[in-house]
Length: 254
Image 1 (cartoon, rainbow, N blue to C red):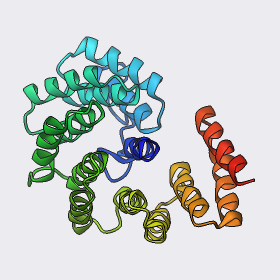
Image 2: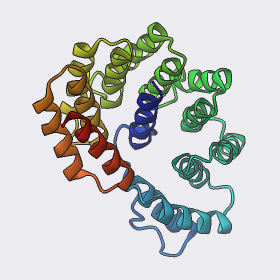
Image 3: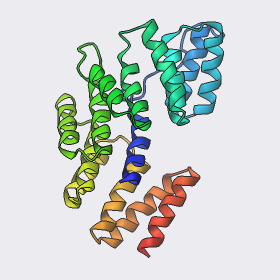
């Protein structure tokens, strides 16, 4: 179960906050202004360049400390760095300045989940999921499902997945989450069905989705299919740790 939750977290970071990457390129904003610097930071964050994002966001916040999107971006940076206590401080500051910035509730729920605080995690995620003003409630439902899965509350987890899919039935992270829930209960055929469905709605392959599919192929004894998908994942990844993980899986098959 621990390995599955880690994979959920990695995938979650890619998709949380919005259905797709937001166009945060500085555009026509005056170069050198706090807004320009902040948008550069958010642009780097969307590209997964966390260190560059942190540099730009800190520069922007030094000039203008109360920029809500900049503070929220720094919270996300610290989630990437797994410094969840610092992330919580940033998100709480966001909400003190702008109580209606519901994405902060969503990320607070994620941070508290990683810290093992079930009650605070659920409280914040429910605020996001049930707000008519939150543009992406499917993100909060995904995190609620992740929270319940971490406690092995499979029925609750599936309920939240289905509620999220009612909002957006093509939301890949929720389809992937449904696969994880089935896999956790050893329903591997169903898990494979949803992992593949999640992959099919992506515009480009994601290494973590490929790993999930490969892992279930191994459990189903489909050796060649597992090797094919894992070799594809290995050819895509640039992360040393992920490469090591995939090589271990391939070695286990061979």
